[in-house]
Image 1 (cartoon, helix red, strand yellow):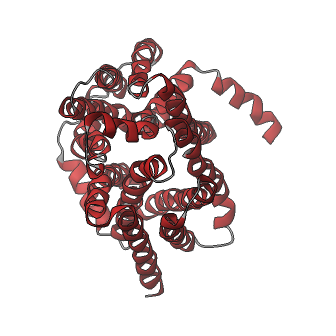
Image 2: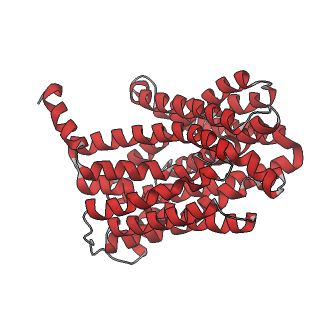
Image 3: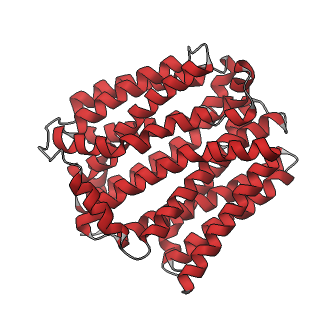
Length: 394
């Protein structure tokens, strides 16, 4: 069948209500962090926080994913992904919207933890449902469009959050209320039959242990951990604070500066398949961490927004290389019978990085301010690139 003959089929696929529901959930999956980063400077001023405490609002959101990814996967296998996803969206939407009314930082953190628990529930099942509903080229098409939706959302949310901040720093925290109509829509659009799977955790743990024994898997999981320590620790937490305090940028300026990374990341990820035909994916992974090291190492020298934007874009290029190549290499390393286990394990490691990143960079800030944050992260990226290079040669 020719490409032209295939195109009408894909257009019909995009009119499928299930696909639109999956894309809507994907939009929610990045809302919890991307939309609030522009208002972090105003939030810490309102609550009278030390700068190094800022990352807690991100860490407590990511922490439930470390704990609940595996249980949610097992429950979804037993009772149906759709039921788990709808309930998770409701928790995410209600707890998230209540964050806008929190009168103390402690209440805000408690609500963010509940919101993160909801996010862990639907984020783990959204991609799995693509595999449940579609196969072959249709599956590849939906996955490709879903990645595009994710990149667009990641680029737009900081700008949306920064623009809404003109109405008050609390307003972007109310955006998760949009998850409620999506939950009710998904309830009627997505089939809700349970799969009758086993509730035992042993098959998942056995699969994970088997995969971790395979050569190279451990280093790839470590790459995932470090990638998201850098993303959540330096970029999402401290670049907004740097713009707000050192460069005197408003929430609007922060919101329209941050997307430079997402745009660069999306373009790079789209080019990775073509680059992988010329250069090995291991080399692309090493180059990705090299981009992180260069961008983060030069950030303390940026004296204006215009000097900062190119460095943010270079960081985004690194993200586009590291995330896409790590996933591809993990899929290659895992046999088909254990791919579900290794991707679940990778998801847990990813969320561990999201949780640890702001805590570790908070400690670095307490020691030496912004310079310590970005130089320590640059050193970590350089160490990772060097380790991957040495292990590849050996």
